[in-house]
Amino acid sequence: MPQRWLVTGNSRGIGRALSEAVLDAGHRMVATAREPAHLADLTERYGDAIRTVALDVTDPAAAQAAVRVAVDSFGGLDVLVNMPAMATSTQSRIWTWTISAGRSKRTCSGRSS
Image 1 (cartoon, rainbow, N blue to C red):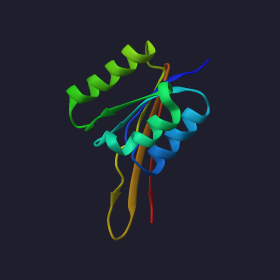
Image 2: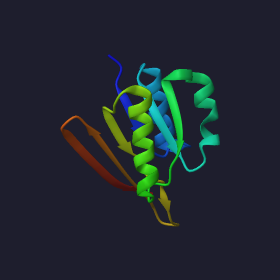
Image 3: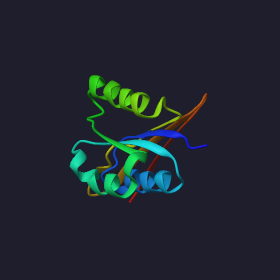
Image 4: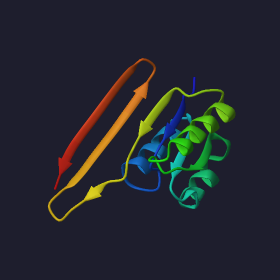
């Protein structure tokens, strides 16, 4: 049975790769980006399995609207992945992601150079 996903930060990097993996596996998803035009190719490729939404994760109203799209389009939400933008410096890159599914929640953080 396909799951209903909401993934933030789908324009590039890990968020983009995760989105493609989720959709290739036959799930449905709401993909978000500050500029949803960057997600047009996903919409063309996956059709009705995807909805795209403009989202700045620091805006609570925009976050609520993204969840509403999942509920209205797919009847609910099974998995939420918050994939914030990667912060970079000359010394390292910092990444953080959170996956929530059902009652379990896992958060992973790391630093790579």
